[in-house]
Image (cartoon, rainbow, N blue to C red; front, side, top):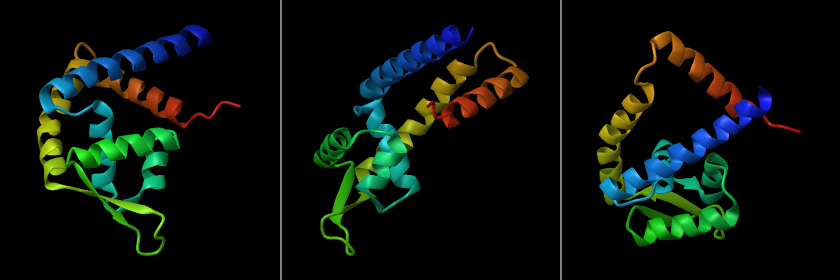
Length: 139
């Protein structure tokens, strides 16, 4: 059962990210990863690049490219850190905030599709399982 469960979680993750990314790109004209990054920056305005790397669990090279594209697209503003000139702090731009305003109803729609056909009790178990899975660090 463990092998099957791991495979199902991996398949679900891949499918959800791929299909959500298509929706975000189509309706918001930004990638799903950029939307997630915008939410992280909004929650931690002025965060360092390394903080965003940890939150999104991406490699340094991937986060550098992501942040550069977001800055080029006017979604965020990158400023030098006053304490460390080599570091950058990330701030939401007006355009980035507007994208998030449009993302909220879209996420509500996607969440409604995910929950369709499940009772509140079943969803509570799924949420508990996913929270548990997110906290595991395999050796």
